[in-house]
Length: 231
Picture 1 (cartoon, one colour):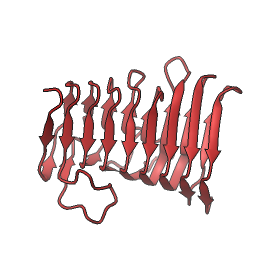
Picture 2: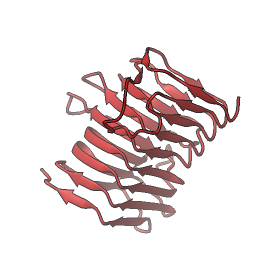
Picture 3: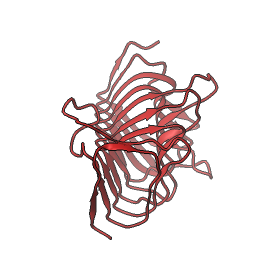
Picture 4: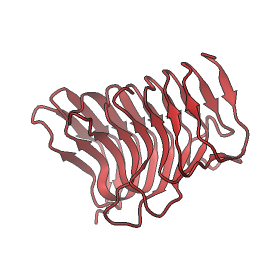
């Protein structure tokens, strides 16, 4: 029911979960510990190779899990003001055009914090696997995460009407080994999009920040980032 917490112990769970209750918290055994923390213990590992977990409710929290996915890990179809935190994401298939987390147009105010995204890349050069996809970024915050060996780390925009609006903050993340369209890719933003890319470390990658078909009045703040060792 709304406002409840479900505590999940360690183990491997070959299944997908659909959350349709507002205010629900799913708490794994490593809740409160960042995805790269050396204090993490045994994981609750979600391994549905052909499915994905769905967030279809508001104010949902997913905290402290390990996702090993074949194509898609978490999709938010209506997860307004939800939080995905302290979790690990790793692609298990060698080819994919998928994503670890995808927030659709009806999902705003998504917070993605303190996660580890690793090995999210395809062996096929024409593929592009994403860490986080945000189709309508209004109020979204992506902060304190580590993206290591990912095709495209953060993909903002790509709405069905080729616009993206609202505010999105990408801050205090570490990016390395980004091989396709950058640590941050901004697709087709309209004049009301406000993008802040601040205080990140981006290194050993092919592209840092890439904007595609940006309106000349869209607002970008790209400052205090550390760019290192670009190919």
